[in-house]
Image (cartoon, rainbow, N blue to C red):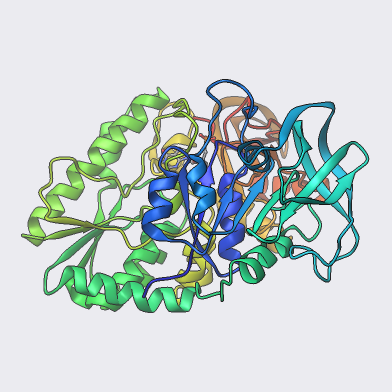
Length: 511
Ligand code: XMP
């Protein structure tokens, strides 16, 4: 079934994916397309509407990102946000200039025409999120100005005949009051969308689509127990049942009870499920290795070997399934970001394994949609809401060389930390939290005896995209309880520290 579509034209702004997520939250399907390809895609897909994103450039600089002006002749409504609004103003004959006063952060905006298409029924004044050093000085012919702030005369411009709208502020960020409501009005009232994008429908369609793709063939999936691969497994099990083989490589670097939990959920006969207990293989390769990048490389390579060995046992398989999600697919208007760590995803594709086709049923979904889909498919909450867990597992949370004893200590301490955070009701507001066994030992006293044991670090972060993160302000009394329980219940740990660095300059993981 074809969904109504909005094309989000990416000009390299920092909130671009957020815009797309907000549109999807309004139950409207959208795709993010770099500005260089946008016109071609728009002509091909004939979307209900177009959104121009913000961007770091100034529209009047030579070589600034732009889109062919033909886009305004297609009869499709356009909403420009920040840079996108300025671009629209300039392209249609208005004037854009450096702002005498830059505006960053929360600003009170007055809607001079509160009955306008984007604001009907909303308060006449709203706090909005501004972030610009350039502003629209003169609107093009056909436009009227419908909102202003004390230092920005054109906060909103509208051409209700041609259905072009420009917002100087960012409706997609949560700091903008009623921002999602304004987007919703654009989508429903201006573009005529009806809200035909829901996860229930998506599940049905996706099952039919992969069923048609796979036919009577066999499909193989590397199941890590992470949200993405788990949802793919559940979906494919519904689509092709036992013709799906899932290989779960247990590298011995999972958290406490995690391997058994994964086996419980997926080893119930709905699919062909193989758990490979490969801890010995991984740990012997890792013995004595203390360099983080070397650890990652060893684990990545060993993973592929184990996977290939198992795949051979299963025999000829035509399809390989992967948990690729939309943020991995979006080709941004910006250049490539620098690689800080070589991330290894357990779902990685062995380059030289011969498959007919790849099956990627989550390719169009954002992470929150993948979780919703997981719920639709009946996966348990703890799997669907699982915090991210790195492919190399606890190997990069035991600093320095890895031993079974160290892994066991870490598993026990980490389980206590997670249990207490959940008990305190903080497990949704802290986006990732875990324990790290530092390689440092220090002197302590327990009973009447001297100890010389490990220091354990606790890490908790809040973040929207894991690219930047702030350390979580866990209340002292909860930290106290966690610290008390760990030193009492886990032998050989006699000191607990809490990591209070943000990313950057640190990273979320310690290795
Ligand atoms: P860093 O430490 O780079 O982590 O700030 C950012 C996010 O990525 C996760 N992470 C990984 N995920 N394979 C993964 O699948 C990896 O090798 C890997 N290393 C880090 C990390 O847990 C955090 O969520």
